[in-house]
Image (cartoon, rainbow, N blue to C red; front, side, top):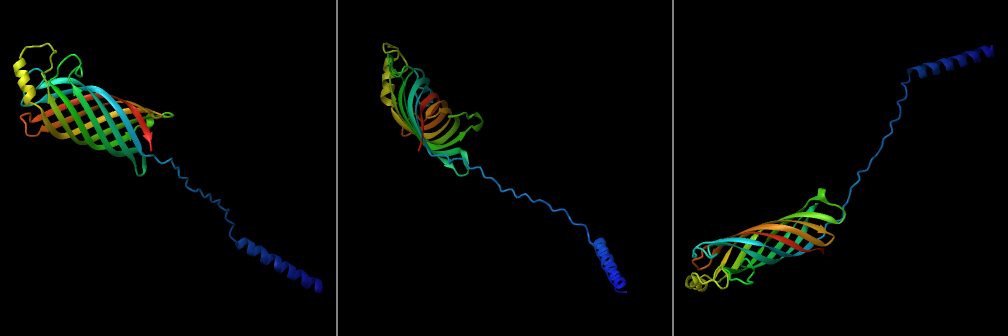
Length: 239
């Protein structure tokens, strides 16, 4: 009788366990959660740069209030100059920098005063703002390409000569002598320039163009317009 009672209890427990397991919902498969931490690529911070360049080019000029001909009213000349730029990186962008541009330019006729007289000997100073952009798709090793735009103030001291003629020319000598005595003047205005350079490590080679619109101070030569193009050779120094 005891064995029958024990067998009945055992069967009751088994049936209850079977019913519970039948009612239990199936286990959900555990989902693997992959935590990916964002990776921040940090490039070396761009340094301030100082560029120093010698320039050699040509300058075409037009000046109002002058004797017609002999290069006073219009003419072209060779030019020599020095340029300095100090630029700083823009926050958050390695390929853009901005800063200060300073330029000194000298011209004295088509031969720079060698073997001929000139209508104008000019000394020009520019000071302005520079915005410099790298072309990253053209970078290779230590070679970097840059495009720079400048905008600022310009001034010139113009010393009139005997005209764009040979030193032995006598035609119109009296008129040219009077012009050389009257036309010396100072002029101020604006300057806009653009240049493109390639830098190999620290060596800089490039070309540039610029425009100047200058107004004469207390002179009949009320306005001078200058259009120039030049080659640039120098150094690019990281500070």
